[in-house]
Image (tube, rainbow, N blue to C red):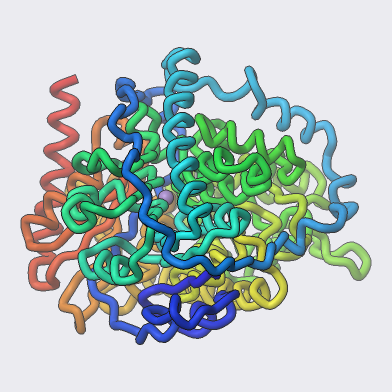
Length: 614
Ligand SMILES: [Mn+2]
């Protein structure tokens, strides 16, 4: 039985994705009334592009694995003995052969790219010795297999396993990976997607009397809450956010930060979940590409040519080895193999090209102005059909255009890099390009349909994919509309303060997409070294929802947005936290301006302190 539900349940979540129902098990869930959510906006996803940090970056000293995390507690007696065999949904797209599109790939480039991501040729990481990195990863893997053992035990006892995950692309991918691994174990499970954890949510989960709770892509920032509210509960946390406090020794806490691995860049929530899934059963290596999608969703492609590195690269190798992934370097337009070039251009929002992103007609006109014909005969041309010269012309024109629109000089660098193609996905679908897949997941989460995203990660296609695709279209329209609104001249909706940018979404921008907006803008404003604080206000709740982004250049100098937002929000009886590079908070509307001033000051202070001290 799989139930996927969220606090803003609508449509799909309670119906389609509920594969097997048992009236008793369902009592709390399937008819859960839509609750007006409070405490939302913890937009912890996403970081941001940057190139400098891999040279400057640091890895914090390795901490030995916590020997107390052994989870020796006796298991509860199994709750119910009914066997619930789940339909084994093997992805329908994993069936046939990859279409001939692959043959047309530029083989020379393919060969070199594939080499680069493997073994010794992988990007050297950050001045730390390979041995140390290996030790770190080994310790993390050992920790992951503790989690795997505990999950297997609960699955064998047929206890209810409650999976709680984060609403963004990485969180949905993580939920999908663990969800799939659990269905393969025939486990009884329930999946719940949240923007963050609070007391009410913990109580709701407890009311289900789960035998095991697995938190994915969240939990590490809420250890105090979990310690105090769930003292007798068996708990696994698979997260990559900065841990705040110490986990109760009975918890199995798997987090790369505990082993000196940078969780904001080198391993995602989905990646952490994947390591556990792989430890549960080797057959789960087919989920490696979903972990790649999660890492890209959290913008972890920070290595040269926008590659993934660290443990993410090892996961990428699993996906390459099982033939589900192909990597090439090219312009990063979604659907490079399959989509008409003007559509591919219009679908691309990193960087956001004002006047082209989201506007197919205008992209078509832009191409025409460069003398690039969109069709050959009566067939649309895809990016792969362009000559090298045409690609160069297009890249240069876009770079000039971006600068003319006020973007920083290197914004165009975001247009090129490693393209991750999921070779078993149907061409023309948004799942074919791993980055677009992550945008689709994000869209389902942000548009109140996270169950769709999880179902797709677990292998559903068909009508689920159809519905998700239209959700994605709608999401793109919404984002484009908001970005154009923000960028209207003479409105000062994007305001530059001394140390930060403020993006004033007021009550206009839906607070659920404020994180996406700040991510997109973070590569597009004139002074990228200034962190972005974007907010939207929700009058009914009396709250401002805040999403902050910085670039690696600044975090490598010691800026920690998660900490700053936590401190500033707590001062105004709000709450905040996240990664150093991407964080979220909420504060009462009346305190918003003081909060902003405080953040501006804290950013200044933190950067000064660090540069003086180091
Ligand atoms: Mn994440």
